Image (cartoon, rainbow, N blue to C red; front, side, top):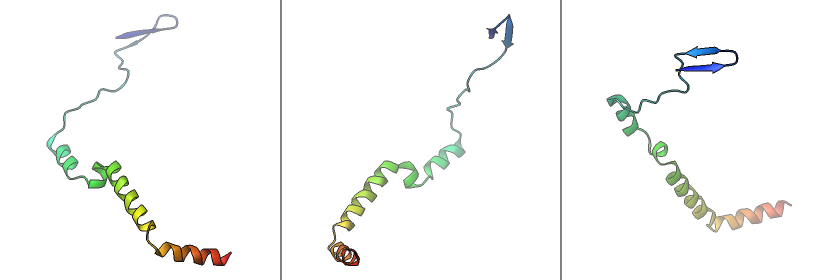
Length: 73
């Protein structure tokens, strides 16, 4: 492959971009299977954490904490 730039300048045997090798060897397959739950399912984990946080914030304890903060001001 040759590319003409300007006054007959040529770049020979060049590759534009990188070639991607999609073949996985056995070590990469094992690493993928041994990865943590958080790395494999980040969206599901964030939804679970959000619901858990919402549930904790519904407890009546927070009314006492809010009253204490309001008394400070």
